[in-house]
Length: 344
Ligand SMILES: Cc1ncc(COP(=O)(O)O)c(C=O)c1O
Image (cartoon, rainbow, N blue to C red; front, side, top):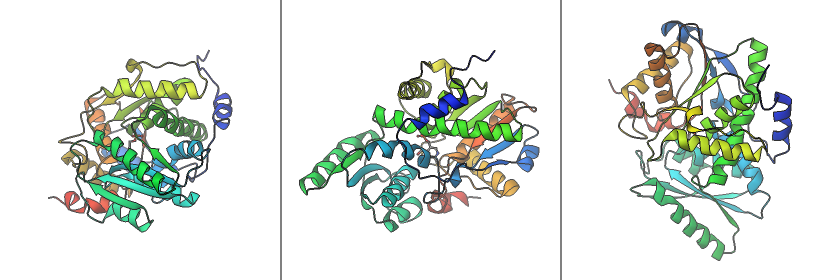
């Protein structure tokens, strides 16, 4: 007997009762990658093409913003204030979503690795008419006070700002609903194709692996979610991801509580630091492009694929297993990272 907490249709009706706006082209395709599988010696590999969610070059953030912005729009808001690094996919997708919704955007972007170079995501932010300030920060955790100050400045000019603070627990929990919904979407695709994946691999710092881990466990699908972290945080990723998943579980009025032991996460593929490419990541990007004609991005998905490949080589993923790799997008950064990618 299944020990699932909810059936797929019960989970679907819980999700339907939560405010959501439609931004993504769904369902995204689930592509089988036979040439990549063969090169890697066996496991069946599928790529869930969330790089094709459709909003300003796509990516995982589109699903998350469907739930987050629906909540924000219940308030009287005319400008969003957000921030991260200049090559932020999150800010590019926030900008695109807000343009569709007729809202302005003010971005505070830390230099990161690529600085104010008008390429990739930063170029797209500017083309969409975001107001952009590029700042030098030693630590991205210094961002929230700058967002507060910008919101105050806007308020004084009569505007109605809303700060999207990526560290706020309620922002993380609501956004993670996007990947609970993605589990339901995949479950239908798995049924249609007739597969029961052993693994889902994903580049994830927080909301994405939280939503996926929660979704698979609510439905008790026995598929293990492995998050490959793109960035080093002080706090253990499994602890943080479990906390976000539990807050999301409460939004769904679900009794499931995850612990850090339920979360599989690795920091082993970050390399020197966030935003700096690794040899293994560059090799993974080239391998997937050469075998399947699919592009990964330099900062997130190429490092996650490097983790997946290493886990195949180490036997963590076995020859007869089936793996789904979630392509979380990030593709505009390829152009900002051109010089890093053509290293000999
Ligand atoms: C392309 C891409 N993949 C993965 C992630 C990680 O997503 P999350 O922070 O939801 O775990 C991000 C976050 O910025 C991203 O842009």
